[in-house]
Length: 176
Ligand code: FE
Ligand code: FE
Image (cartoon, rainbow, N blue to C red):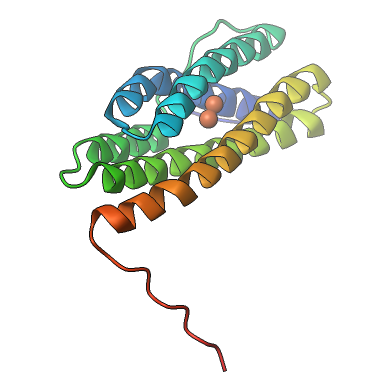
């Protein structure tokens, strides 16, 4: 167990965690994009890869502002999420159902990133590290946008998955 005696040290710990998490995504996103069938989803994964390179750059900048090298520490949460993504990639069955699984995995990643960046940004703000806070906020905004785009794509993909599996959408239950 490493000692984290101050909020400043905790901020650094969080940023290193995010740095490792984003670097894992650089490797995972091309594989998810390759596995995707829906063209919008494929394009989404490739846009996300470009965006992720920017996220790594911002984290390196934040570390530089804090006087540290661009180096992360193992983020076990993202390792698990990437494993879930690998499971989605390996899903056998209709393409649209696999796409739906890939979106689910991608959205879990986005939500984790949003939580991580939100936490780190709050630490930076509390410490008066305004430049670091601004860098973290810029990425946080992009993570939120990506999540919304994935939600929009999922509406199309889920309908395709229903059709591909021969399922009929269940009628909405009336609530009384
Ligand atoms: Fe990111
Ligand atoms: Fe992201």
